[in-house]
Length: 185
Image (cartoon, rainbow, N blue to C red; front, side, top):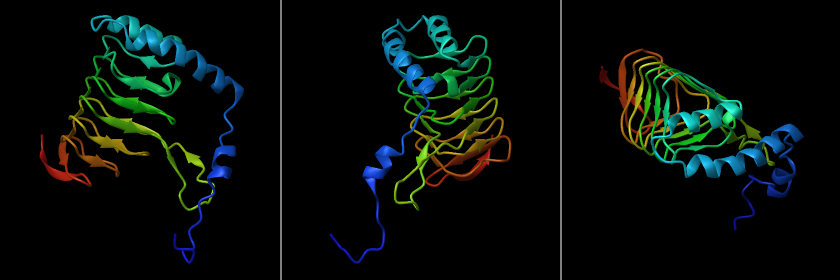
């Protein structure tokens, strides 16, 4: 290890820095138990999964389809508009709020990541910038949406794209790493 490197990570302090309020800890334990019902519910029981999420504080619109293989970390930080779909193997890492508009498709293997660490501080404190996905958006398979990103209405995010900056123009198609505009819808 290069001792001349001025960067220092204090992971012992990082662990001690995780001070969740008791109410959040209780919610996490309850959701941990209910997640088993969510995960193993038959695929057609979308309304049952939506009901479970609502009971845990999520705001779920009408006729929303969330596959049982989707992983929702904190339901109380999730808002989904009417007629949207969250497909299988989607990871909704919503340490911070994630809002998904109406008629939006989040395809298989997508990661929505509303949590990161302040890497400039030795104890790596958690930061939770929100993600906002507009209405009529299609996030294609395997894309990554980073913390603090906003995606405008009717945009398309190409498969495996890495979105780390806002997509501000409605109806554009973005792709690549990092994602950039490649056309109009």
